[in-house]
Length: 164
Image 1 (cartoon, rainbow, N blue to C red):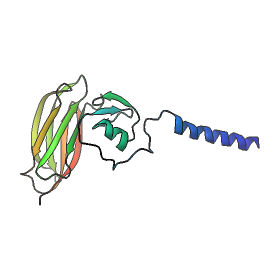
Image 2 (image 1 turned 45 degrees about the vertical axis):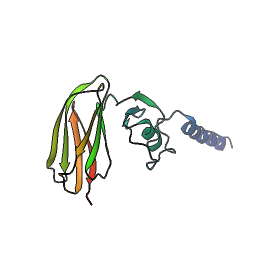
Image 3 (image 1 turned 90 degrees about the vertical axis):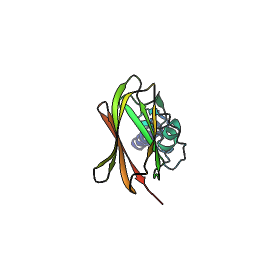
Image 4 (image 1 turned 135 degrees about the vertical axis):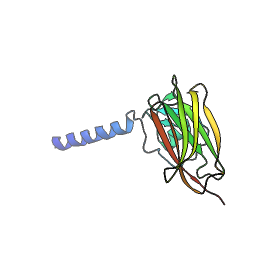
C-alpha cells in the first residue's frame, strides 16, 4: 500500500511541476492560426528564438517570457516578409541584435537555385531597422526563397509569387 501511495505521490509531483513550474513555453497556448498583426517589433523569447512581435511569441509560439526587446544576440539578424503569397510587392523588415553592426546581402532565389534579385545592405545596426518594399513584378509566378546573410549568419524564408 505504501508503495502504491509513493508512486501516486511521485507521479502527482512530476505532473504538478509540469503544470505549475516556470516553463518557457506553454504548449496549451500554442495556436498557429491566431491572427496577430504584421507590426514588426522583434522580441527575444526565453527559448532563444526571435519572434516578429510579442503577440506572435505569446499566442502562436506559447512563449511565457520575453528576455530582450529586439533580436536575440546569438541570432544577430532577423527578418519578416509579408504578404505571403504576394502578387506585386513583398514587404521586407530586417532587425539586428543590440550592439552589432554588420553588412549583409539580400537575395531572392528561384527553385532552380538562380539568383533573381541581389542587393547589398551596408552598415546595418539595431539603431536603424531596415525596411523595404520589394517589387516582384519582374518575377514569374512560382516559389522563391528570400535569403539574408551577414555577420556569419544566414536566414531564409520561402514565399510564393502569384499573378491573376
